[in-house]
Image 1 (cartoon, rainbow, N blue to C red):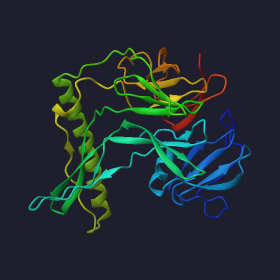
Image 2 (tube, rainbow, N blue to C red):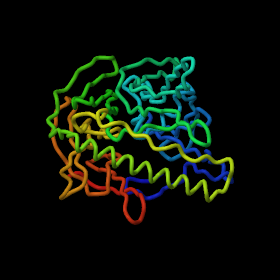
Image 3 (tube, rainbow, N blue to C red):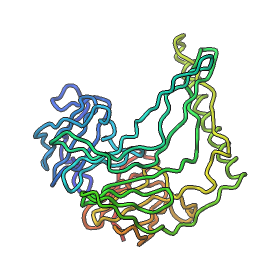
Image 4 (spheres, rainbow, N blue to C red):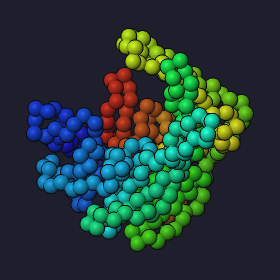
Length: 338
């Protein structure tokens, strides 16, 4: 637990087995609960610990369906889970796979991730879920590749995917940022409204630009494959397999325009505004650019943050918390919105 100036106040839980506060080494998630309490999500035990303002664990709540526990941990793909005005837990489960039986005489087909995901509202008292909406998500195609080590599953890299994103406003309203760059709102009673299209300088992807993106993705994938091969050689283990060849989509599979944002781009502040990290290419004089959208879906500001930083959250009184990557590593800093 840290105060608003990022000073450590106490240790709520850790990964040291010698203490009474161990929670394992597979990580967990944090959710803002009602009032000033916090939920710590432990996916290993499918439970949520209720932490009071002093950092004490006061009780345990069973997590929703086991297959949804990982969705509560947040992150770029899952969004930030939270609670709506009626106290229902709201989250998006992106772990949805479709299995297809192979046809006679053909190679088997690996499970495939679907390109849409539900935003679920879960009542912790009745243990009943309902689906508020669907959103478009990243879906990496998987293929089987024949190698000298046998059949291996290999991803087909797509460097430019068009997706939706979402977050919860402070009053529990679900805000979904659609790929065409407008916001859909869903309140706790299910009422829906849509904001206007947000002005954006869309960048067209020419054939040469698409080819350059594909070549860059293939190069990055090959470097990762080379590191994997060196690791397998260093381990000198006969049980280790050589990584499958790098697969990349064709240029024709890329969109004609660069998306305005990527997955994990949206954060809501205490005033009910959405901050969207855009893909604007005008970063010569500053770092990433954020569009600020009010609770009617209208663009009200554009803000640049320093290079090497990204917004990860907000505090009261215009406080902004930034994740920073520099020579010292990755750490948090506190800033103030001007």
